Length: 377
Image (cartoon, rainbow, N blue to C red; front, side, top):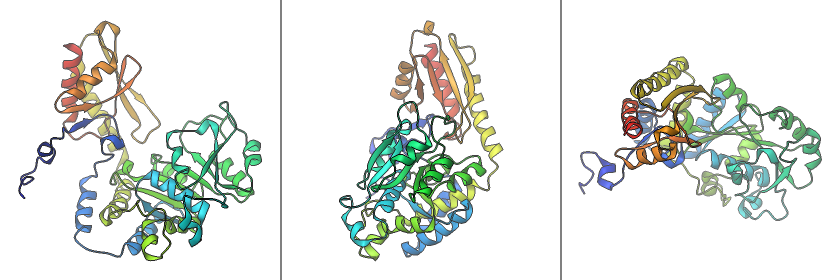
């Protein structure tokens, strides 16, 4: 079979590649590991290893970097949340593990502040957990959280994000309340990876903390759970290796990883903690400046760089005056319909959002040209 010899694999499959100005989104493939990570993954693929040992050793390395008692690589952050919930419900009990997602007779309630409800909180229910809302749309108090904990409470879920207001009980206070009643806290810290000290503090902030490794340059389908050793051990007991090695019929069997993906997480984390992040962020600004220069002089269009609380720290906004005769969504649709496809974010009727941290070098010039054609045409 020689169809794919000589490259151009997407073209030969009939798939149009996308210039990504949106971010680390699953619908676009999640991540592009840097060369150092890809090289390590290629090397790892050449040799067989015992996967249990590989997970143990990479977990030891990751926990050492993040300053936690233990860690384990998972197949993404959603899997990390799901396996963490399973761990809090079934623990290390082989009978309970084999019954999931049937949680009859087990502690299966996962408390969540109503104001923290979000798209991915479904992950706390996939292993048989039942979400119980605490508080209301206006917020929640520590007293309400404590009163909601009962004999069926398996854990408290927490959506960690910067900028939460005082109407939401803080992670620190949530952990304090939970621990006073012997309940663990699972934190979703998916992309909370910069600044580095914030990354470490987040990792150490709850009993189980879950990250998407794609955000720091690991393969798309990889994540991390870190935290207390006894609970991380229970996460391991739910996983794909436990199913085969220990006869536990673990519910997490479908969430398996390649050995090279696991290596990729460790190498990407090492690179993330050793790179010059000031240069990284300056490079994003350089790319956004290239686009701004490319759009200079286009009528009814203005651009501005705005700060955000994400690990890439800023985004470029392209604001379209109604006199241009097009909405931001119409422009985005034109960009997507072209070749190559270009994906941007849209905010309201008049604003296109461009995130430069996922560009390949040169993408910014193509984006500027395509935007100019769509806006000036």
